[in-house]
Length: 399
Image (tube, rainbow, N blue to C red; front, side, top):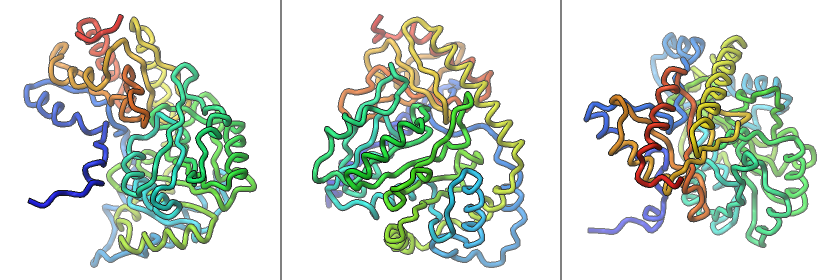
């Protein structure tokens, strides 16, 4: 039998989804599972999106332009303008979700063997995307004690080599919920200018910034316009994860011309997804106000309940709908699997994502889990009860 590629062997499994078989087995045993392992909101998709898809009068479902519908890209530019991001439709390529935007950006900006510095913990699939693009991730550690603030610029400089080609961030952050300050981004800007690096920024959670804190985009940074690539998605903005519509954005014409070749190779983004996404730009502000209010309430509840549990520590995030909690456990992977295989409380259990999968540094995050507070408060309450009871009897508890 022929052997698969080394790249396929080395491709990391998703820490968010690798426990799914254990969850499926638990469900077959009759256990109710609270899914806090994945950023799949229970918030309803806006009617503007769904109605546009339902009423689309299409006789032939054709390919779209490889960059996406021009009408959508033009309207999307108005959306970004509301955030003081001034671009035109030629600076935008619509992608099959934010995931494809990241993949195309990496393949466009980096050669095989180039290094990209990413603050960790980071969205787990960055590891997979970089592996597919033959890019080397150089992680720079942020810590739970500081709420996962940006590491010192001096620590970034220690990692820069002749192979360093870029820096990548997520703001607001997945998996930490950290929201970078303007000062932090300005410091990054100076580093990018000094070494002439690309700065890739995943900003899919911009709608979810809390406590009056300011969202600052890398597109706001002056003097590095040709270094910046913005990565986006509608999945969380409109609770439309299955639409698979994202965007890659840059004012760098050479970058966009190169990215367009990859976009043409995959032909086009999904037409129905674009129809819904374009219509969703007309979603009333009340929808977003209500969603944001709901997430703030969920965040406040979860953080308070976590920090009540003996031995648990969780900083309060300022964005997105994730947090990372430190638990009194020996091994997050073992614990999360144990919750599904061996634990129930009143016929229920909870599913987390082990934080180990969000680090690139071996051994990091061993006592941390990522929690997505994407369920209604009643479910979140039951999940926190399950966690508290589980920690009382977990064999690998450390204190």
